[in-house]
Image (cartoon, rainbow over all chains, first blue to last red; front, side, top):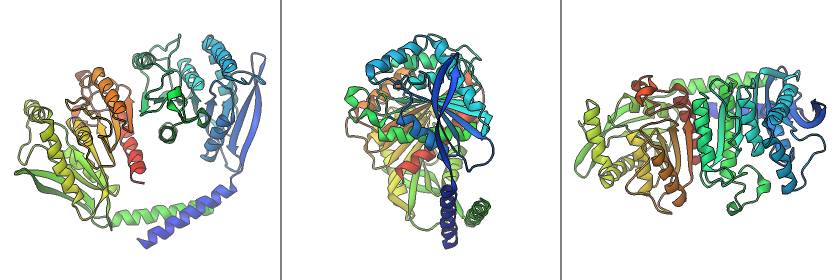
Length: 261
Length: 261
């Protein structure tokens, strides 16, 4: 028994050493869609060798923020190449809720444009020399969770999509065979912004389309449960929830382990 | 990098050595409730030292079968002390669906008796010298999933309960503060035996009672999705589903990692 413990400690030390050697790159990247310049954010371990899975991160309604940058770095430390895409365009960064609503509304109202912007981000990720284009997933938050589903509905060649408190309804539902990706839905059980009817309709859409999905509902969690900036008062309808944040991140890791095995 | 790999291999070897030394005990155990002899099944690693978490396994409507014995052994190999309890009584083993329905119906119809039988099993598990009584959980299948919830509703001192395709409704719903345990519900998204109304009512009960629960719904999964004996034809309403079985077992492990940390 002591022998085992000593080796495990040695193993921990070795991982620590490996981490110390990691060179986590963090940078903005520019790419284009239909003549519009988009400014995303990329992170990966430059000390790692070879092609590895790539993760697309789709922002909530405020655009690319510290939250997306933090998730990109977390994913880079886990060994992925992460690209936080920019749906809105370089320099288009809502300063408040009203501006966020206007921007998000533009893409909610034009799903074809929303899908095209995301497809441009996906292409940018896949063309990276350190990305294995056959092993790519997309994750998204709120508006971006809805975006992850739109990407899937468009038949994008991704192994999986994960939504955290994402919007579920769409005017362009999937038909049987449209969706290639496996789907993981992480949902606040009492999210007042995503109505039970939307959830019900989404599940019917997924079953009818023959999608391999999983839905997780977290007790007491409202909208934006992964966003520390949402505060801690669930009565406002949007609030951080530590347990739901931690559990959904773990569920995402299990999902990645399965789709990238 | 090579240094890391060598140490990891050494770590694997050490674990392999530990596994080779494991002595997995598998035995029937008799205990009593109110003068009735119950015959459960226990499994644990007799080579491991010290007290460790205990897991109660609550059977589906056929009573203790090879399925419960298999899960007990799987849990023992993971380091737990597992006790598959017997709700029905020694020698009471349904031979067919009609007999199973009669037995299960007896306990569905008398929840107080159901809870008392389960409490007797829990006491039997907690009194084991190798069990840490402060770190105990219960899992259950179908009828036994409903049993895991009844145990929780009764305020049993368990860290968590996990239901696999369990029945969700009860004539004795929990009130605020009744349930100590964290709750994980693994549910077939198209289970025709557990109606949407039952699911809806369960979620309302859990939210009203302030329970820390998680619900996972698995695409295309019907009743009995963990039971290989249920066959592979979902149109019958009960069928094995490999993905849902594997994913729900992983979710249970994550749940245990959290509640026993």
